[in-house]
Amino acid sequence: MPRTHQAAWDRLAHVAVLDLPRLNGDSSTVVDPTVELDVDEVFGRRAPLVVEIGSGSGDALVTGATEHPDWDFLALEVWRPGIGHTLAKMSSATGGEALPNVRFVEVDAEVALRTLLAAGSVHEVWTFFPDPWPKQRHHKRRIVDAGFAGTVLRLLEPGGTWRLATDWAEYARSMREVLDAHDGLRLVSTDRAPLRPMTRFERRGIEEGRPITDLAYVRD
Ligand SMILES: C[S@@+](CC[C@H](N)C(=O)[O-])C[C@H]1O[C@@H](n2cnc3c(N)ncnc32)[C@H](O)[C@@H]1O
Image (cartoon, rainbow, N blue to C red; front, side):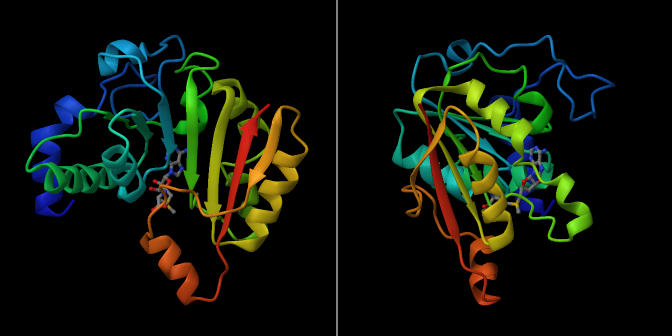
């Protein structure tokens, strides 16, 4: 991690990054499946919850949490330097503090979301620019598939929204195929997600001539 990100991590991780029990030791990214998070206790209030999967360097997270102090944000990210970078951004935005409505868990979201949160407890799920795994033989590593759609559907409150974005047209097609076929999810918009800022992944996609697709599915 660059020095400023590490410094932000050292100062703020103990308040912003949840220390959850894990399977296979402290450095594992697999959360103990018997643990269900008490979100109201974590944030000290009850508010609409946004779960961001793969928050990266945190642009969407910091924008969303700043624009919506009345919502809570839980970011799942396996890449610690990304969390450090996000903490540094939060610190710049607040003058040195963590944002009170943001928490991180450093875990594999695909596994954790099966058990970590109560069914129907999430207002929005964000999956912006998930790793595209463009080679055919790697497609099975993509996070958005039928099994994961079932996981997300279980989490969403009725009327809750799953927002996705990608710069890979073929991944976008596969997302639509999988999610359109999923009972209980309905495509409601292909407009840019309201709180999604430009990130380096979107910029690189545009520079390399890849169109950006946004999808918003609602739980019926
Ligand atoms: C291409 S980046 C996009 C980051 C961010 N959403 C953005 O738009 O700038 C994908 C991120 O997802 C994270 N990621 C990939 N698989 C994950 C998983 N199973 N659980 C949690 N995070 C994951 C990666 O570490 C990476 O930071």
